[in-house]
Amino acid sequence: MGQEQNPFNFKRVKRETKKVTGLIGIREDPHLGLGAVGAEEENVDMTPEDLQAASDYYGEIMAAKLGGENKEQIKERFRKIDELMVAPEIWEKALKYFHHRRDYFIEMARHVRNKGVSHRRPHPFQVGCVALGIEPDSIKGVKYEPHEMYNFKVQPGPRTGRYKRCAERGALEIARNFSKVIAAIITVSTETNTGDPSKTEGRVLHPCFDCRNMYRGLLRGGFIREDTIICMVNDANDQTVIEETTVGKLLSIYQDDLPNIPA
Image (cartoon, rainbow, N blue to C red; front, side):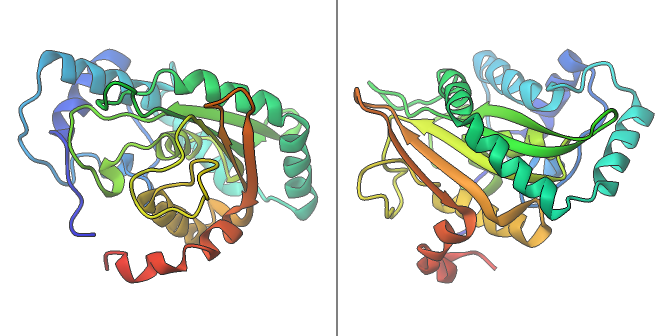
């Protein structure tokens, strides 16, 4: 697929975002992207509107539920996440929690989808995502918490890797700061194809090549599991179409990705 294409100066966006949010920390993950902000950059000209849109987007990710925490509080939150043990019964309860509230999570993803930033005309390409995480809780010991995000492109043009700001990547970046592991990923879109080869049979939108590659990395790191649920929803017509599977089963039908993954 070649080298990742960087759409704009990440360091500049990060500076502007920090001015607005006052943020001081975020958990790094090489398979997601925010931890690598500024690691590679091009000096691409950005209009004030571009810069504002980028700052708004990264502000949503970086400031989500983090407002008011100091360095020690952030460090303590990460410690509790790292120490949380997800026993089999906790995992099973999380999957049951998802199925019991699936319609609610679909509505969450549908609602946030409308904020998606796309340059395609006349019909923008918009996706909403909810990632359901298992998290430490000071009272109950554990809780199941959804984290939502939309797709975002600050400027027209192709994007790859962590610079392709899919809804799934954004939701998982938020969840990475609070969750030990992801039990379910829900996406909603009116689309059925991301532009790369898909095996959806025209029913729902499967994750793109870059998201599938991201899932493979998160699987290796343990942040998602083979039996993490993937729930993909298409609401383009009067009848909502839902396809539900697991990460392991989804990736198994995209084995032909493997020769194209950058070393």
